[in-house]
Length: 166
Image (cartoon, rainbow, N blue to C red; front, side, top):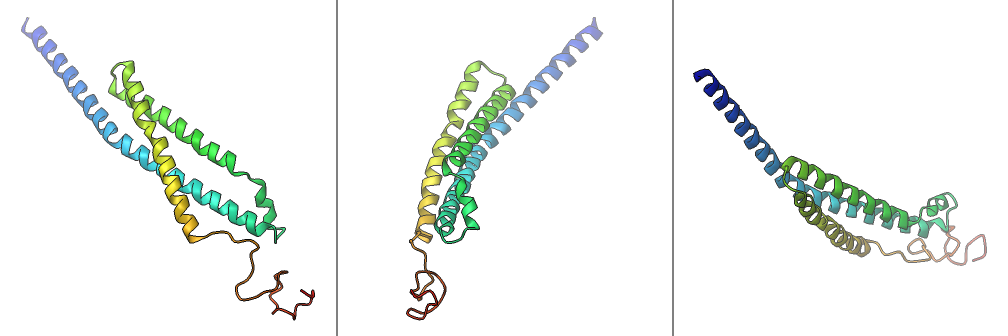
């Protein structure tokens, strides 16, 4: 009977040790997942605002250069939709991973979906702030002309000496 008791004790100790390790991993994942998710959503917002500013710049310059006009075909709406879909997929996958590691009830999945859905709020706040920062640096003024030169055909000639007669 002594061997059976030792076997049961060692089995219970292993189970408790494995449960403790799982709780440690779940706590580590929980501590890393939420801040990293918010940072990733903010980085996506910065990238989206840079892309929208670049597309606006290219469309402003594209009317003067046929080579850059090919970039005008990309509307900004699908780019924003891409980032919304990426954030939604990231939120769902991260919530499922955290709920599986935690191993509690189905309410844990709902809890993580709610917490990580705040990444959408972080996306919108960061997008608005970064967009205003970019707007403060560069505001498109049409028509674009070289500074100090008044020729509207952009031939870089001084006024009244343009070969086109501007």
